[in-house]
Length: 272
Image (cartoon, rainbow, N blue to C red; front, top):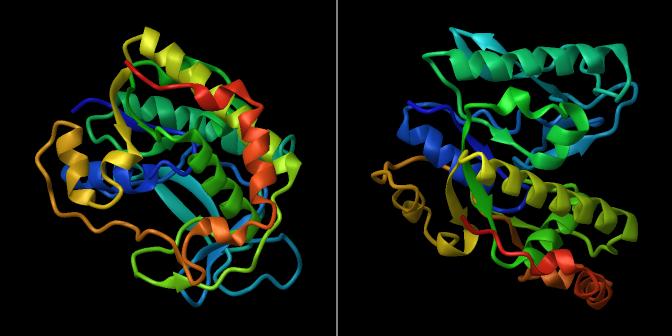
């Protein structure tokens, strides 16, 4: 088995693709190993994975995500005991980064490989050195419509709703106003993603590109698009809103589109 990993920015369906790919190999998808969030997480009563600010008297079920070697395989762990966020520059943060770098190296040399996601922006913030990704074979998840991808990410950032889990449900989310600060953050993420895509394309490490638009209405198309036989796998459900289309949540929708129209990055096309 190659050392497969998902390489993708956010809101490309990368979680579902990762779940399908891991399922094909009889494994459990281990999510985004490069994410070292400075906020904590928990699943609320409806199953939504939400951010939790670090403070006294944390809600029940609050966790910090970490990784370790379990049964000779890299696995994600939810630490519910006295969870603390990883603050950049702190001792705990530096220790965690060093540990995860070693885990990336362990995985590529292991006969029992794990499948997780490398998110370009969080990788370059936390890990930087690309030597830890040598010999990885990437499934690159993308969207042809970069504007809709980033709009989806901006909405998730503002609503704090990134996934709803395995149960189909409709979310009653409040209206939001997207900040320029968050837009600039996402724009930087797109640029980093393009740069890493081009870097790994040059090194022949991009195994396949899979576009969200080609499978969004039928997850059974994912594995055949990757060159594998379809294997039934339980995956996260798509977020649905009571207002219908996600665009209706955004108070300053036209302003956001205007920002995008003024940035050349949104005209980029991923291709091998």
